[in-house]
Amino acid sequence: MRGWDEQTGSLFSYQSPESLVPADHPLRLIRGVVNSALERLSPEFARLYSAYGRASIAPEKLLRALLLQAFYGVRSERQLMEQVTYNMLFRWFIGLSMDAAVWDVSVFTKNRDRLLEGDIAREFLLAVLADPKVRPLLSAEHFSVDGTLIEAWASIKSFQPKDGSGPPPDPGRNGERDFRGRKRSNETHQSATDPQARLYRKGDGQPARLCYLGHLLMENRNGLIVDAELTQATGWAERAAAEAMIETTAPAGGVTLGADKAYDAAVHVANLRRLGVTPHVARNANGRRSAIDGRTTRHPGYAVSQLLRKRIEEPFGWIKSASAFRQAKHRGRDRVGWMFTLKAAAYNLVRLPKLFIAT
Image (cartoon, rainbow, N blue to C red; front, side, top):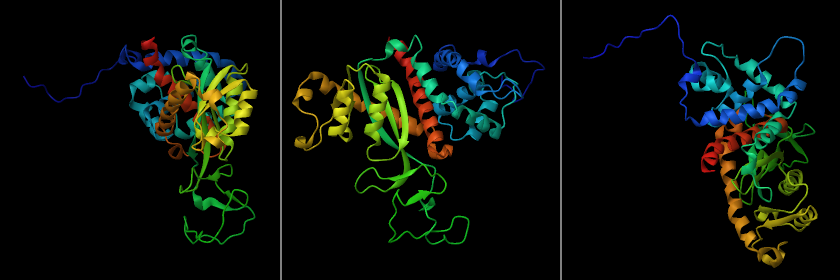
């Protein structure tokens, strides 16, 4: 017998979002690790908030919502709030009941900005790595490092002379500008909408863009990110960030660090050796100009590091595509760096279910 297309409702509902999530859903395992990390961060949250006044959105719920935005590639906070309205999986992960009101977008973003002040994204990354179930997965001896361009949310038209000279734009809301025959550099020009962004190009023949440089330090055992930094785009920023990250992660030295040819510089290699780090850096095409010689390349571990360091391209691709920085409309080094680090932590969380099953 054919059923009738009728919508029926009940006066009361006895289901919760918890009952609607399958027992084997990967987010169940991820949520356990996230909750443990947030519990360790509770003292940090307490220092950011006043003991008086009206209660704000719980920082734990804010971070869970932002993680969902990274996991599922939600393009904006407005779309995220829309998803939370009707998506029971999102409500369960964040910690909202079936009938809880969803926050206004402006309220959500203003409360999120408070977390920028405490560098909570980096603390959260470290708290995830400190989990008793995650710590055994990490290597303490072998690492890889790399950097990538993070395009700033700033138009090239906003790159104007610092002294205010130059012709005015054409009439209109987004008037045209003529840059022909005009030299522009970071010393004389600055973006009017994102002053911390720098004009940079990846190589010869590549277009120059206003951007930042994102850096990741990966352990080689399971490819988990152990540190993330965002710097202004300069020719030496990648090497300086690598030295700072490895010194913080392995202060006692005695480790190896794999990297590509961009890190094959005599000063950088000497600095790594001074820190007690063996530089497994890819040699330049012209071996006579390389800072790496046969004393390093003759060991089998060097070849292994060169193979494993290529895996760092995967987290870069995931982080930049999970929720594009340009679409998120974050301006300034602090904001972009905060989101970059949080997405690095989200990448680790996405990998954990498979790693736990494998072990």
